[in-house]
Image (cartoon, rainbow, N blue to C red; front, top):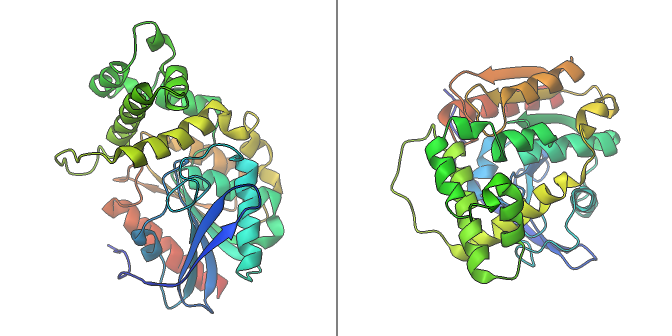
Amino acid sequence: MRLLYDPIAQFTVDRFDSGDGHGIYVEQAGDPKGIPVLFLHGGPGSGCNENHRRYFNPGVYRVILFDQRGSGKSTPKGEVQNNTTQLLLRDMELIRNHTGVGQWLLFGGSWGSTLALLYAQAHPEWVRGMVLRGIFLARERDLYWFAHDGVSRIFPDEWDRFLGAMTPEERHDPLAACQQHVLGSDAVLRERSALAWLRWAGQVATYLLPEAPPAEPDMAITVQQARIEMHYAQQRYFLTENQILDNANRIPKIPVHIIHGRRDLTCTLDAAWALREKLPYADLVIVREGGHLASEPAMVDALVTATDSMADKLR
């Protein structure tokens, strides 16, 4: 079974001015003359960490990572003004131009897979290939599964705990209530709802990992991440319904690896299956023991295998 590559230090760290109030944190690692690959984190709002560099052979890849608007080390933290899907795609082009990259590989999981697919549709000429994990198509049905009636049937205890942060009147549409509070001005309601949402999402995403004692949350980071998530969900990710699949023909016939855990309860396998039907040339790997997280051993194995395979195809 493949493991992550050894820790990789950055060879450069930059912060780019978006021109509309955001400072975008960007770092690069690996071989400066290697195959350029852009890492797209999930959430929206989660940010990158040092392990994200380790899915790539540092002797082969030039790994470019950035924290999306309002996320991680980008500033202002948790800012939702001038923060849209379309502006994130623009930031990706800004990064590509600033780093002097021509074509690059896209590597994205969950919300990161959404961005990769949208970028490939908007800028097909710059995409050499894609490695996509835990496909999120940002359809109404995908959001309904996670935040209304779907996975709540598998985790009724955790769902009940999430609803406990709301009044009885709010529980008929808990996502709308959560959005109102997290994006509102009442600090007490904002923190309570942000914590309840991220605990719910975390329980679903991590259920295959060994159970560990709950860590004391960093409330500033919790609110920051929840604000971005609620902002994007409230605006239905700034997309039309089924936009990605409806425009799949705009994606060039490039090497595409789709990797999805059969036990993924955050983003269900039917999304990957639907995407594969639109991209018949793509390679779909269903990871029997895999869930949603890239850090699960079975998912690490599949992802590192995919990046090594992609390097062989692109060199």
